Length: 298
Image (cartoon, rainbow, N blue to C red; front, side):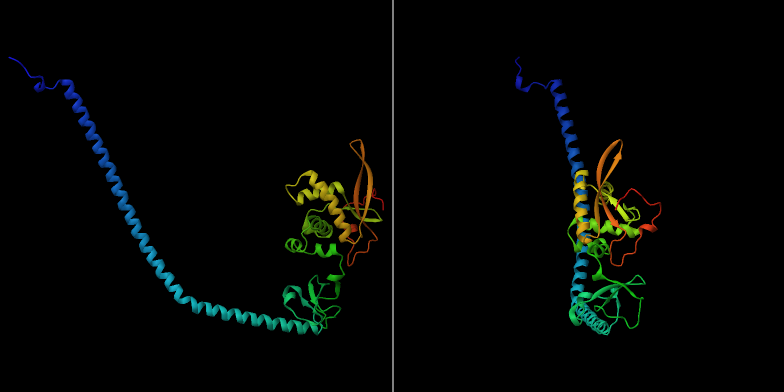
């Protein structure tokens, strides 16, 4: 009796292989179904978030529409306020101009110099005994004598004194030259304790105060952080030139020979002489703390 190979029973190994493949397919299907469930949950969450965003957008659109409807009346009110403010500003400017033409001295903080139309077209800034800054027409006396006597008119000051009275913003707006700004700040450091960093030293009977080139270099590096030692040396020379120019040569320069660490060298010094003619300046060197220095020659 013969047998047919095509109808033979599968072997045990074939059954095990098919069972393994079937189990793998089942695990794969389970993983896909779990992934699909997670994606379905995520889609549901995103759709919910989208609905919330749509609702928010609708509320915002309604608010924008409401604001668009109210904008014209609001703009009209703002325009009316602006016109009123401008009208009041014009009235105040006119009143101030009339008072100035009558000889009044007005506090500088209350005056917009550029907006006033006065006779002669020029105002003069003056300092008074009370320490305040005032505007007046040139050479006019205040009939009310407010603030005391005029100490000095701004125009009578040396350029270095005018710059030294400005704050940092005003200084930068007035000059783009770094050496000029450094010169003004260095000058201000002489008499204004608020500056805090004062490299000036007491002089002798003929020299009120002086500052050495080396002290000036270190001072410049403290003022302008991040600059190199070499650039600071260049700025020293340029700042000295600016000091001489802006003070109209009220300062003097000397080369002083001295020894340090056994070596002899010559160093420049900027001198403010005791007899220097400085408009409105009150000598302060004698009021500085510490003894006089006798090694500075006039």
